[in-house]
Length: 345
Image (cartoon, rainbow, N blue to C red):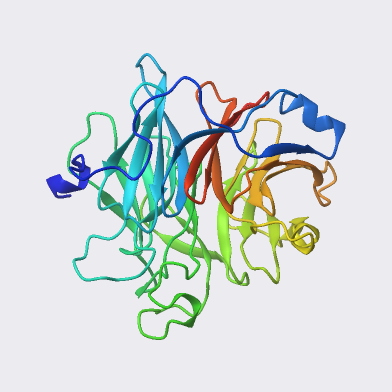
């Protein structure tokens, strides 16, 4: 990787870059089931930590030995930038370019999207413009980014969107069309005839594990890694799907875990997108209204809708950070947070 990729930008920031102690608040908590009280305190606030982004996405908390215990990374996809946020320093650019290293204009969303940490502490990125899954050593690393996968059977991916590392070293990821120059209508850059879900093993073997979704997007495992959740951002089929994970790493037949159709009928903004799972198996997914919290069914039936974090903006993704109980949310132009009673994975 060129030195400029990890250099701090010299241009002025589009986000709030000065640390604060009292943050402005937005939105509200919608409580649809008493069980939500055990996950979100009744006095919870939705704090705006930074703003001014074009489309914020893919938050991930990185633990370190500093006084704050770590820092948050997240993408601004159209700006081709990964930002770093801490309580002390606020928001500063961290990686530029984050997902497209070309010179000529490629698409309106060329940057990195979903971010995650694998078991080695590497930053795993889904990169739209370079159409790959990459890995970057954050602590004391050298050599820049490493490509984990950029094609399936010789054909380039559409625009990898979100990632979920497995404890065995494999990385699962989704590949919808959102980063292509003409998105789903693209006939020039697009090489694959599916919007798939894939797995890449530690030895870089790529397997197509799901081929029948129209817009696979967010992705996460259950605490025991026996269930793979996929958020589908198709307004006509706005589902969070659940798939049993087989011993060979593939998945079995999927089932609808959450159907967001009712929320969309209420004209709530957003579709299923990025999602995370807490230690008790509850799914926190972007969807109509903001972040939707769904409790799993013990008999593998549909999940139970517990409530919403109403952000007031189209919401892309979320991640648990700090001690595991703070939920960071990327929503349109905002980076926001809610302090919860849950513990993220």
